[in-house]
Image 1 (cartoon, one colour):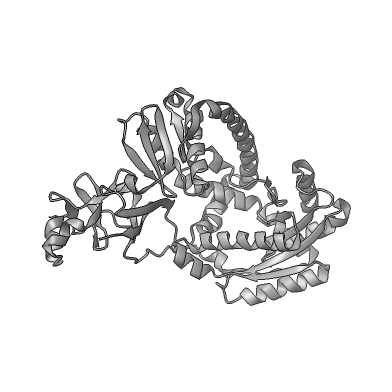
Image 2: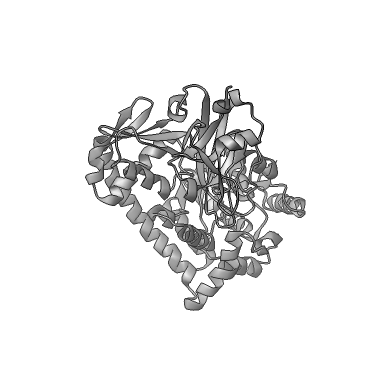
Length: 447
């Protein structure tokens, strides 16, 4: 089966495009998206759909305008409507404290969505291919993943389609070269300082020594796992109404849920957290574990979760709901804060804000509280591990005696990780060994 036949087979098998659809292609000018646009252009009359393309300039590379010019030229040659958008990846990355890669993804899909709404397109086609799927699976496996992480990219997800997902990178370049179709090269793809590039350039080629069809086999494995995941999701649906119920402004996972099969139990916990959060990206296995462990703790115990949520052990289960001031301070109303937990990636700049700090999650975990400073509190002040009484630290910093008890801290027991607004302890700071980060963002301080 050649590349054209593979794309058409994917369209038919997964019902990617229907007659009358208006399809927008994300066109970078690189080999993958150029191949996708050319093949879809050949099929648009057969399947009776409208076709257009959008180029997003991330403003990160010197060749960006070259890529935009080529993309516009290609669309003109194919008589396809062309749209252009520039996004501020560096600015968004700095403001939101996310990697440039994540900032680019968020802004890129935001621009896609805006263009589709403005010009009445109902399908977005992206050029993800088999190698992308294999790279992502390996990346998730290296970081630790559940079943869903083994199906990270699907042929169809809502209104997003990926017709090239069964096609390898080698097949794409061979197709373009055989057809004499030019495309733009991205020099940053050779920079192995980025984890994904390292997997692409170093790991995948080595695995092909084991089996030269390694990538295709991973695609097939992802399809099988996706089918199994869909069955498990349907099974989880059957238990949701029985074991999850409304609880004020959140949801409650009933005690009896822990008697279910472990996978179903954890899936219900994950589903509960994501529904209250109305988001999923930063919810990981460590948060699922913290909630399942909380189920066996005494009533009143809590753990903090991403998106400003708190899990609390109740008499009849564990509640998941948005935090309020009573959850987060020994003195109600004095302080509010939010947390989020995420995997550390290359290129992340640690924020230097007075009331937003990043900590090593594996050290601080979700067991901390935010409370006033106490007399017996200690904080690690030396990288070697030496500690000091917090009251002595405040004295050294010449904080007036009558104000010292007004200071709040992030602490576990009498060990302080951060005297808010003054100093972080040395033991929970981000290091080269940090894998997971928890951000604590103090929204309001009253004194």
